Length: 275
Image 1 (tube, rainbow, N blue to C red):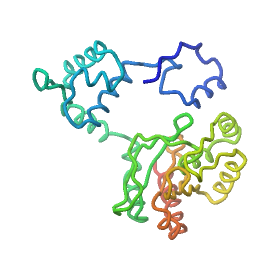
Image 2 (image 1 turned 120 degrees about the horizontal axis):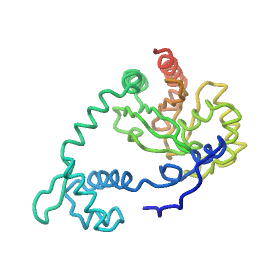
Image 3 (image 1 turned 60 degrees about the horizontal axis):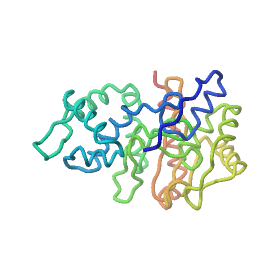
C-alpha cells in the first residue's frame, strides 16, 4: 500500500483544486489518505480474490498492515455483522450482509435506472460490450458494463479505471470538456504508452480529438487493450458528462463501424433526451 503522504494546505483556488483532481494520486481528501476506509475496501477485495476464509495474519500480509490494525478492522466488521468467524484458527469470511446492502443500493441507483435499459438495447443492437464511464481526475471509471454474449468479446468490470488518453471513453470525455479546461488537463496529463498503438504526443492526441468531435464519436484502435477497438460518444446526464462505449474485437468493430456509430449516437441522444 502506498506510504501516507504529508498533509498539504487546503486548495484555495480553482487551479489548485484542478491540480489535485487531475493528479495520479490514490483517492484521498486533500491528499490525506483515509486509511480506515481504504483498508476496509481492501479487506473485501482480499476475500473476493481469495475466494475462501482468511485468518488475521494472512489478511494483514495481503493488506501490508500490522496484525494489530487488521484485528481492529476485523472485529469492527464482525460486530457490524459483515464478517463472521468460522471457528478457532479457521479464519473469517464475509456475511451476506454485504450483498444485501449492495443490492439495495443498486436497486435505487438513479443513474442505472435511467440508462441501463438503453445500454442493454445498444448491446443487443451491436452485439458488443457496452460501457458507461465518467471522468475521475486523470482517469475514466467504468460505472456500468453490459457484456456481449459472444464467446470472444471485450470484458470489463464495474469500477475499473482507464487512462483518458488511451481509452475511447476518456477521449469522449476530453472532447466534451470546454477547450480551456481540456487544454489545462492535457498540459498536466502524462501520456504514458499502454500499448504500441497508444498516442503519446499531445499534438497527435489533439488532432485525434478534433477528428472525433467532427464525427460526433471518438475511437481507439488497440490503444488501451491490444486487438480491441472501441468507439465512444459523450452524453450529458444530470448536468455532468458521461461516456458511452461500444467495444469489441478489432475485426468485428471495423466491419460494422458505421452501423455501430449510428447506434451509439442514437443511444447518446436518447439518454440526453430523458428527463
